[in-house]
Image (cartoon, rainbow, N blue to C red; front, side, top):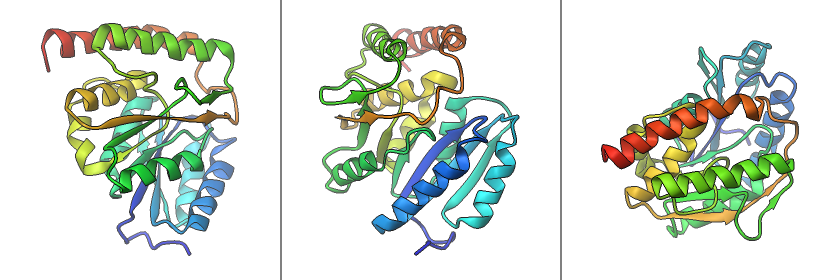
Length: 242
């Protein structure tokens, strides 16, 4: 049964959405149906950011039709800012950060089991951990490993992946979110690194990634911004000690 919007859910799923008119409706409908079949109490936050293809109107329709759906809007394309906004607006005890082209309910189940048993504060679904299955193009798999190497060298990151699926105790991680200083592509990385540095129990679990469409933003266009944000993070965390 669909949960009324005014009930406090156990779980909040947060998904940044940018120019996803061709995917967002069937993906959201399928995710809601599968979560309802699991019998969990949840809300689904779709954090639209700067879309120009009619995505915002589609989200308004989803919000009207599906009680668990909440649509948020940001006036500029910014994945990290949209993810941060969604996390800060979440009401659930646990937050799951998802991708509209993945929606891995198996990850939800495994991560939430660990969180409910209090075996961890923060779960990262790693595409590069032993036992994972990363079916993206080889250049994107290589980019994940290069980025993780840079984060280990520059910021002391302990792990194999920072970007993608995550789940955590909302109240334990909210202070981490509030300390983050970058947005766009490296917000997710800063969130994981700061969680480690602030003493939270961060655990990786392998995931099997089957994307439903090519990435909406070309990798090469993201590179300059990623390096700017990486430099800012190294300055703030390593040099200033913040």
